[in-house]
Length: 188
Length: 188
DNA sequence: AAGTTATATATGATGCGTGACATATGACAG
DNA sequence: CTGTCATATGTCACGCATCATATATAACTT
Image (cartoon, rainbow over all chains, first blue to last red; front, side, top):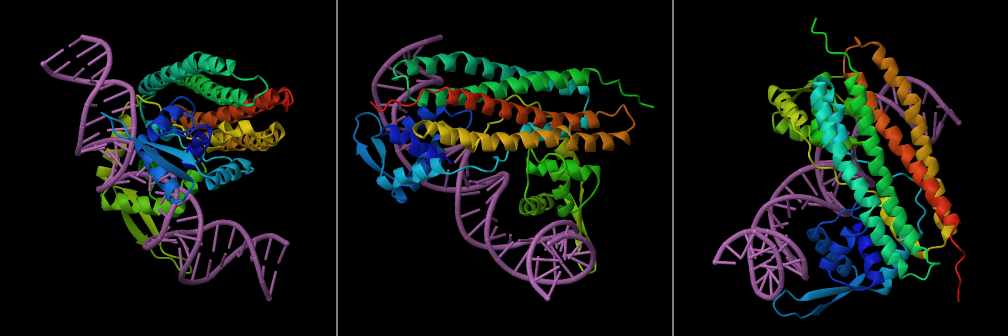
């Protein structure tokens, strides 16, 4: 997965592993976060498979920059990937929901407090996606020629993040409400 | 993660790896799917760490059943885990959204078709969660004493799945609409 | 009669990720 | 003057998952 994301970014213009980490942080981070260590590893594999090549740019004072660019084979691999029709939903893994599933034995108040903490974090995410990132994308879009798909797509990814965060906020609110209405436990 | 889920299920009553797979399929599958192979592996680790013990029940015609139960240490580990306050959001990974992020260069009609396929799959999920699973949980709840938290919690997990599926359907519809309104590409 | 599903356990290879560590320096804040 | 942030690359140990494979039989479907 990361493999293709890296090819996608490098096709826009060649850059280093470090640059790729920033590019990811500013775009797909909330649908696919990536650690530097994993990026370097994956670049290594890509180079071994001749999908990218690297050139070293010497620098003084800092480590040399290793700039990667995509080969013809890399471009083909990327285009094949984007061209595939996806017919199955991605498996979802939400560690917190597993935990929550086993909260039946715990005091409701504890669960409510827990949900409030996460509710606020999701709300913060939602706000950031709805304002800051939105403006960033709008600003970047201003340079575009207008009939380009890219800004729409990029903004739709942002929008997905916004909607998902909002849904989590809604779910947490709803669930807190349901927990508040639980009759106190009869110890008889 | 799976480790704790298995402890949680085994605390309700002892069972085999195969049984655990069914239990997961009928409950937390959409927040944490698990393959049999991984379940057996994880049970092996749990036993090595003395968090569970197993007894073999001979059977004729089929492989013997290896029934696992939780030790005191296992119960403690589980209770520690459920008692922890979670203060960070889980990282999210949605392979399809990474792909979609790079759809800018592809013909809009292709993207629309792709989104329709997934839209329908999400709608199917939503319907199943809103009806079948809902009824199953309601039926199981009937046996409960009434002031038990468990059914509420279990149903809230279901509800999260329902809301998330619905949000994906909404996002796909919205995005298809946005793509339909893209002006045809001027080749000048 | 042949094929699939359910029952039941388990291993090996592989993929893909994280977190900690190692190294090095310029710039900026307190 | 000290700390930490940004720049920049990389390795190692480990966790946790998948997929393929092996084995064995009863029951149900086509």
